[in-house]
Length: 202
Image (tube, rainbow, N blue to C red; front, side, top):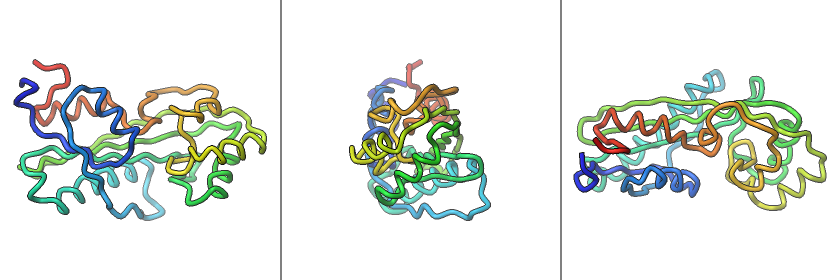
């Protein structure tokens, strides 16, 4: 399929990071942020949380803009941080951000990112996820406070951004870097193939 005849892709996210990663695939896409409810039961597994929320975001855009999303594939995504059995989403304030980082510092945690694709023509959906192990450096309280004051943790799962100043807090990772940023592009490219959208053409 040529780029000119490529099906419409809609990214159900206002995240600048996901926009940049989506753009890296060199496919045309539109942005329609989702305002889906992100509350989940406490007994859901990390895999279920990220895949269900990703699908919820994609479907919310489909339901909210039925006329504007005709004949399109909507991509939703969700990211969480998991330390032992604790789930960290986005901090509500600076105090919570500092508390999250205090818990994560000097330890290893997993970052899960789920992706969902919804075909607005057929109603067909597909979901998947990836997880990456992140080893964080030991951090003095002063360093945590300095990072929190930078403002970067505000809208990040786990209160850090590995692609920004948060990279200085991380010792190493095991797995996909883009999963930690918020959109595992290798997985996404495979999923788009299921909807006849080829990243590298045919």
